Amino acid sequence: MRRHLLRAHQEREPRCPLCPFSAPGYDELRGHVDSAHPEPGPAPAGGRPQCPFCGETGASGRQVEAHLRSRHGRLLDPPAPGNGQQLYECPMCDLVCANCQILQEHVDLHLEEHRFSEVDINVGGNLSDLELAQQLQNEEDRQQGLEEARQEREEFQKLQRQYGLDSSGGYKQQSLKNMEREVAKGRMPPSEYHKRKADMMESLAFGVDDGKTKTSGVIEALCRYYQNEIKDVRRVWLSTGVDHFHSSLGDRGWGCGYRNFQMLLSSLLQNGMYNDCLRDITLIPCIPKIQSMIEDAWKEGFDPQGASHFCNRLHGTKAWIGACEIYSLLTSLRLKCQIIDFHKSTGPLGTHPRLFEWVLSYYSSNREGSTKVVCTPKPPIYMQHQGHSRTIVGIEERKNRTLCLLIFDPGCPSHEMQKLLKQSSDDTSLKLLRKFVGSLKDKQYQIVAIDGELSPEEKVARCQASQVFTAERIP
Image 1 (spheres, helix red, strand yellow):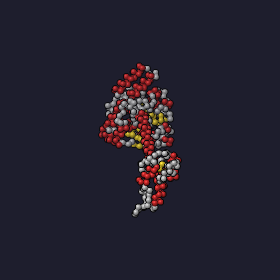
Image 2 (spheres, rainbow, N blue to C red):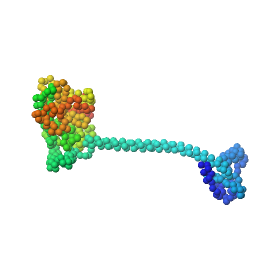
Image 3 (tube, rainbow, N blue to C red):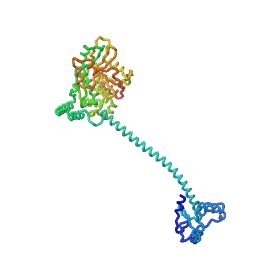
Image 4 (cartoon, rainbow, N blue to C red):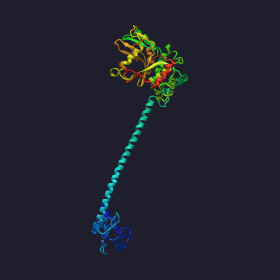
């Protein structure tokens, strides 16, 4: 770099190194320097010798001379005419020197100052790097937050679709869409499509179920079977008559809770002790009507937390419902019921033997009787677990003292249920209904059991209690 600085000097008109004055020749320049910038001499009276350029003082004129030579460089005598000697001008501050040595010393001072300036710049740069690093970290955190928010939003939308809380329509829209798909695949003739569509629209207009997924008489068939073919069963308890309802094209994948309510209601309508509560209901309502009935229960004040979860709207959606919605609906109809929460396993391998024991105590008021087949006046029990719900219609006590639930599953189609109505039905057919302790291994179960009617005052009290309601838990 030093050689580069030295090469930067070029011959030009002589200039004063201490002021902007330019001279036509060296004699004139020397005269200007001597007159305008006199050489330092002895210290003035009462003072110390002083540099005329920067004001620094010295103990003697010799020290000031050395200072001038090292710090500022000193314009020496110009070359004699014709001797070819060259002057050297500092490329950084335009100071003119008579020889290279003085110029090099002078340039070294500039380089030293430059080095210290770089140190200052680097210190400032470090601070800037810290600030930049913080900005980069903040930006990374912001991007990560945006990504997490996007993933959370997508997951929420996925759950909305899974549980029917999106805006894709409800029972009617799904029915039409699935029937159109059946026609497109050649599995349904157009004439059948138009007939089914007309029947569906009529059913929805009146708010009643069309009965096309219903199977009746299964409980009566079970009673006859157990009286004739009891085999390994020591005793059996059955609920009152229950119609089985299974999912259709309009509610497949999300309608199990509504179908189980239809099963409960079919049993209650056959039981005279509930006539007063159900005097306004004579036919099984369709799924959109059940959705409206639950919304009406919310409007009365039942389960405000659950209503908020569904944004106070079920009708026109494919929203799943569970034990809390069934409880709210039944209670709004003045039916006395309770939710029992089996929140953890009570047996080996994740089983729930206490659930079986509770069901047995519900159906068997007098276990010491001699009757082997007990057709009780008890309604069936709504049973909920993760992702599905079913209806308990009875319980077996086996000869080895184990228990077996009898369950109606809305996922079982009518043609399978109708096998139970045949006189030749056997244990193979009962596999559709039987669930032993080892068959129920979900983490948690909730059941809704009905046991009588509520007075208007009791209904109001339960409505108020539901606002801070928690299910009874079996320890």
